[in-house]
Length: 144
Image 1 (spheres, rainbow, N blue to C red):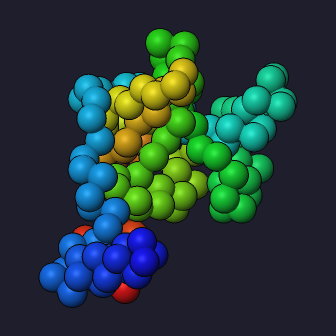
Image 2: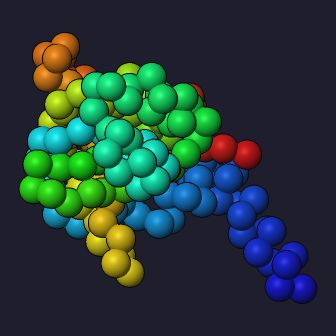
C-alpha cells in the first residue's frame, strides 16, 4: 500500500511538471570565489607528485571522461569535490579546464567532513574566457 501511495505521489508531481529532484531545494552554503586547479581526484590522490598540473592534463581528461571523481585544488591548500548545479553533470566543463590555473565561483557545501563546491561559473586563466558551466541536456525540464 505504501508503495502504491509513493508511486501515485511521484506521478502527480510529474504531471504538474515538478521534478522530484527539485524537492531537495538549492544547495545551502556560502558563496565562494577560489583560484586553483581542477584535478581528477583518482590520480591526484594516488600519484602525489605527478597527478596534477599541465603535465598531467591528457591523463586527467581521460580519467574525468571515464567518470572518475573531480576535484579542485585551491590556492588556500584545500581540496574540494566539484559538483554541478542541482543534478547537472560537470564532467565536460572539468575536462576542458583541467590542469590549468582556474578561478571558479559557486557555493561551498560542507557535509560529514567533505568539502564540495557547486560550480556556477569558471574562468581558465590560460584561455581567459569566462563561461557559465554548461547545463545538462534537458536541465530544468521535468523528467519522466
